[in-house]
Each structure stands twice: as structure tokens, then as C-alpha cells.
Image (tube, rainbow, N blue to C red; front, side, top):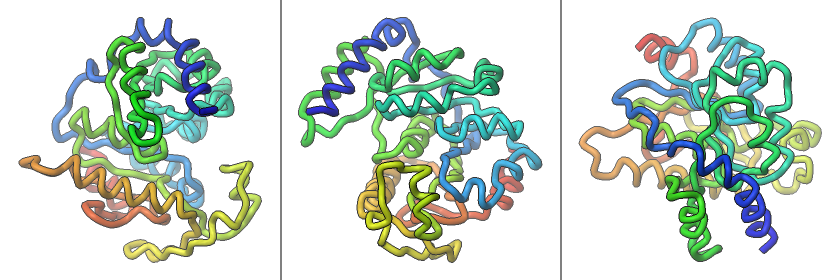
Length: 279
């Protein structure tokens, strides 16, 4: 109930901005143009993937989540889209940087209608909104009510984290293939200081599940929640591809973490950029 109250309060405060924005599906549809999802897991920095991206370049479109946006700009990487979904006030701090304000005009922000109003106010550039597909079993009819209140904005599914929402946006707009970096859902070691940088209220007990990635050979410590989100994403990708004459390729280039299974492919990021960066 507290979560619903937070989302509803956020929606009410965001409504003026929501109603004057165009719908997500009014963005141009593309076909067979590569996309790259940038999430903010530790591998993004440990593998120096932003440095590699800036060096090699990428002529497809880039979809970043809000956490690493400042770091993207600092490395000369300018996402076409930044995605935000969380209703917590803390997430607005990801936009509260001079370099973000300086370069925000280069990026379109796609936000859930239920993000905190401080986040909406903190973004000086173009904004689009979508309605998050909230579970009917857990919160009956909430997504439908939000959809009506938000002026029939598109309802979009995800799998528990904003990186999967970014994937869903790229999918519905027709991008192919869709690469992913910084999508780990785990940590390379049980270092509490590192974990708390990402999840301040957490503790190491939650991250006791050890998983070895079958392609990258890396070890990750994750939680049951993150593992469940991964499993949901694998099913989500398969269901989105079901019946399509040509599958949308999803290529995990995070070089670590727990994302594997189903239709997910894997490449080292350098190889991905060499094959798709100049398409």
C-alpha cells in the first residue's frame, strides 16, 4: 500500500508534464538498426567499457539508464535516450550534475509516469512518459488506472529493473540487434562497501547465491530476487520474439553477471562494436 501511495502521489505531481508530452510510440520506428543498452553495474567500470565505447564509437542508438548517465557524458558518450523507472526521490540525484545539465539537450528522457517529481523537475531536456506494467496479481487495475489518468500513454513492461525497460523500449521501436553492457544483477565479490554503493540498505546475506557465467566464465554473487528478475527477462525476450518472422537479437556484452539463457546471445564488447558499431 505504501508503494501505491508513493506512485500515485508522484503521478499526481507529474501529471501536467505527462499530459503535454508526446507518447513513447510517437517516436520514429526503426528497422534493423543496432541499439546499445547501458546499465550501471560494476562491470561497466571494471571492464572500462565506456572508455572502449568512446574510443571505438557506435553509430547505432544508445539507451542508458539514469545511474551511469553522468559517467557517459564524462567519457564523451552521449545516449540518445535515458530511461528512468524508480519512484524513489534518490534517483533524481543522477541528474543533479552540471555536466548532465550541459548535455541533456542531446538526450531524450523516457520516464515512468510514477517517477519522483524531483526527477522530472531535474531533467532540463525533452521528456517522454510511459505507464509501467504493474502486476495485476499484486496491484489489481493500477496500471489501467494510471494509463487512463496519464492520457492513454503507452503501457510498457519490464522485469524488475530499468535496464530491462530500456530493452523493451528498443524492442518496440524496432531496433535489431540490441546489445547490453553493465547488466550484471550481481557483484564479482562479497565486498559490502561496493554493494552498499548500489544498495545502501542492503547486506551481504542477500547476495549469497554464487553463479558462474557460462560464456564469460566470471563469478557473480547475486540474490534470489535478481535471479528471479533474470529468469523473467529470459522469458520476456522469448515471448516478445514469439511468432516474429525475424527474431530481435539480444546480445549480452556485460562480460560478467548472471544474464544468460533462452534467446540471449553473448559477445565480448570489443567484438560487438567491431561487428555492429559501424552499421
